[in-house]
Amino acid sequence: VYRTSLQKAADSDKRVIARLGENEAAFADLTVANAANKMPRLQAPMVTTGPEDPVALVGQLRSNLQLLQ
Figure 1 (cartoon, rainbow, N blue to C red):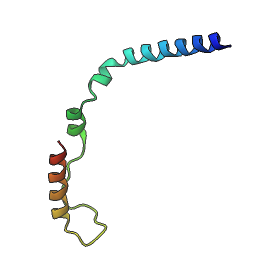
Figure 2: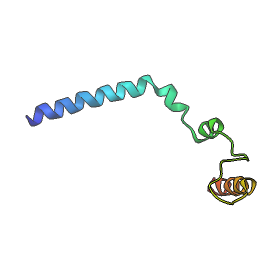
Figure 3: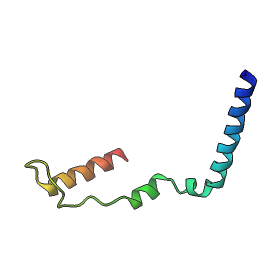
Figure 4: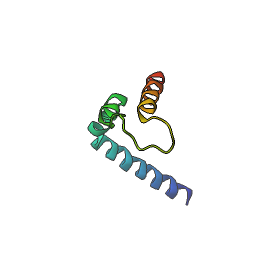
């Protein structure tokens, strides 16, 4: 039973590795820069949930995002 389970796991691993290899080009495009380019830009007006100024919120969010980079 133990050997059978190990063989099944090895076969499963081989299939996963083969599928990853088939999609290698797609995974190569998964970079931070590509993701950032495809994300919507923060801009006012945004839907607000409080009394804050949307323009001020967008500016604050942008500056915080720049600090994270």
